[in-house]
Length: 291
Image (cartoon, rainbow, N blue to C red; front, side):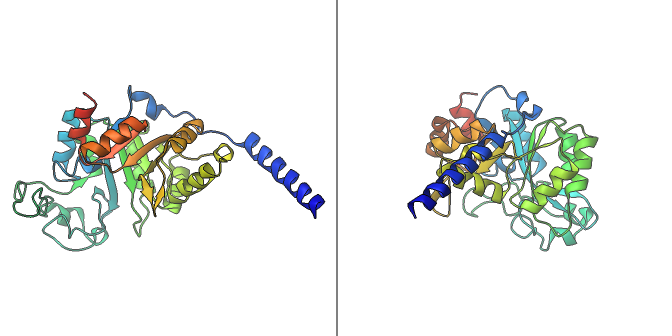
């Protein structure tokens, strides 16, 4: 039995050596060359704790602060327009009700996109009735041309990979966009259609790297993504730790953490040395960074 175990161990070591020699880090991507310093300030939904999230107003205010990236979530309307909203329905944020995919852009534009936004638990709604409407992705590109964006593909019934790629190419945003998705099939589809655009890891890709990193086997990982966008913890497991950050760097991937919002949380991740912070308080993060 000892001899069998020894042979198996030797074979395992040889396999790991082969995997390590064959592994390749993520290729360099021009998207990251545009930023001069880290951590990158990524305004989650434009800064949803400061302004009504995913409205053009929020994105304009975040851009005025000088944040590095504007983050948003993508859905597709019944008439094929890509719009920016976190949820599948309009119920939580607007004065309307229904699935986005079952509504036209015109119907969405009739809604108050800031109807339920409040910073005092519903005592006041300061932006209600101020004309803030649901924003389309094209409107964002037209309003803030060339501004770097971090866009998450939601799991819609209809694919948005082709229309998204078309818009990125139409507005010359291929090197100005980082595309994210929790859904492996959506991410694989987008990469096939739009291979020139930077992407972050999907859920299973992140999970695979986390496991390998904990087993000290991160060196055998060949990433398809150029960044990992993760919470500090997931299902009770600490993800964002020094070994995770250094392991990702060795595979040429950036680490972006979501979504710290307090002064203490933000300072913690600044000190930890993450590459980017996705936050609802971009104003506070900019202050802490002295920018």
